Amino acid sequence: MKYSSKILYNILLAAFLCVFANGCVFVVVGAAGAVGGYAVSRDTFEGVTNKSQDELVAASRKVLSIMGTILNANPKEGIFEATVQGAHVTVVITQVNMTTSKLRVKARKLLFPRSGIAQEVYNKIINQLEQ
Image (cartoon, rainbow, N blue to C red; front, side, top):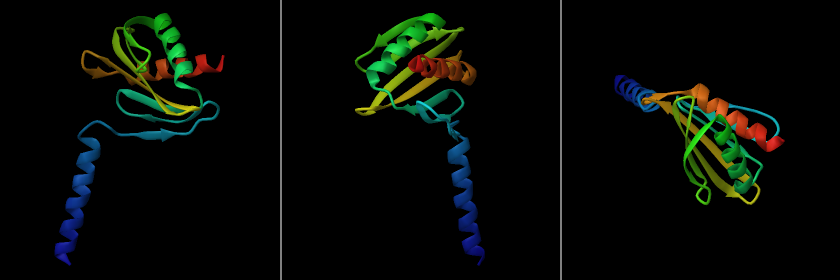
């Protein structure tokens, strides 16, 4: 009996450390409309939309050019790097299938996560898609 409780303790401790030690705690939030839901970590917002990669690329380019300065753009790969409110923002767009794409927005300022900026950029890109 003591041996099995020690194993359970070690498994729970390992799971706890895996989740919280790397800073990748995810919270899934449901939403209606073009977004199926999005995951939140310390510096990243991610979601799946019912839009194509080309539509997301166009919306991302427009939003990033309004909110800040685009440093690198690779529309074919779906990757944008920009400076928004002094933070380094990376937008990655991945085609899931013909009608679905994944949008991932990461924001950091001086190595510190800026989830508020990531969320703002993410929401503005999604809102741009709906216009």
